[in-house]
Amino acid sequence: MYRKSITNVIMIVILYISLAFVQHTAQFTSPVLTGYNLNTTYVKQQIQCVEEALFHESRSESPEGIHAVLSVIYNRTKHKSFRGSFCDVVHQPYQFSYRNYVRKGKPVKTAYKPSEHKVRVTIASYAFDAVVGPFKASVDDDVLYYHTTKLKKNLKWNKKDKIYATIGNHIFIRS
Image 1: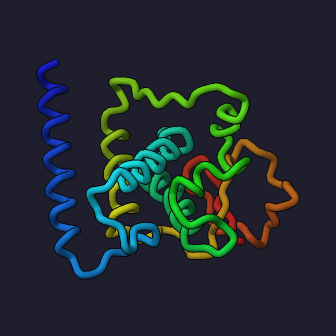
Image 2: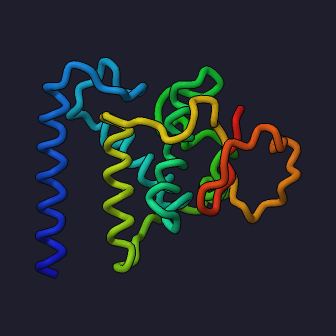
């Protein structure tokens, strides 16, 4: 219990130091936060949306796989075919399978197991960097889709010539 409290305090201190650093930085890369005060509820909501999506979509992946999934979400925030904020992208209907349960009236639960502490820290760090900056996508800007390798490979929107890469358990696809 005591160890968990110390960890939480350390994470909060790191978050506040990072926010202070970013506020004094002339340029940050987030497509979402231009013109927003970095201490707002809006920022916290955006980070929470990213963390939720990464938890459900990629928590069993390596850090490289988690980063690639986040890169797709990030690319969508900058693309004209998608809504502009992280929460808008994540909550867009039928884009992320775990969100289908929400539309059926079931709540989204994000409960890490004690053994997932390391991935929780990785997800929190990546989410913060994506929303507040600096974040550099690990896939090309036109990679806007991915799906699990468990799906059949001949989906009509998954043309062989559009496959960017397979990273972990996901196939990444160009638009």
